[in-house]
Figure 1 (spheres, one colour):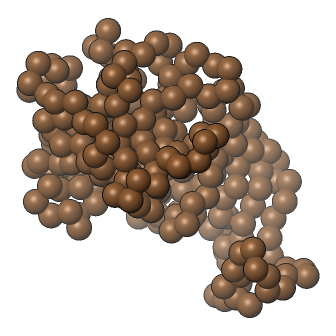
Figure 2: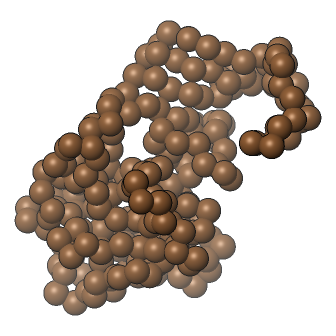
Length: 228
């Protein structure tokens, strides 16, 4: 099947999975909903913008809170977007009007057949349908501006891939901004906030238990500090 041949595919509505036989269409308001209904994946326009993006958000919050965006730097200008997964394991965002690929997941592994699933952890994964423990791509490895529970920042020293947060340009434009939050892997790791290449803030070094140099951190009822 050609990647832009939609003649034999079905629409995916309120399920948590996209199979190779299914697609999500913006002009049909299709969404994926996680197993408990807490999270959703679909198309949206941020703020006052008319551009269209594929994102993940909290499904039961009235004010849409988007925590991840697939095509933040490659918006669609209309509602022609189609999201689908194809063999040998590609997750694609397509413009159905022009047959152009707008965005694709960075996948190097091959599986037959693949599927994409929205987990209750707000992680979108692509796996082998016959072995779902074989995760070949996950959105947690490509965060946008939100650090989610279960997500890990750092660097894969084998592939060289770095996982870090980057700001949005504005509330109306989620494109990659100038600020980043990342782990500096040189020597002992430390967390760093950068404005472009300029370091604006950094933690103490990681000593295997916590970042050194922390001040006035005490136990509280709002969030947990694992090293206290």
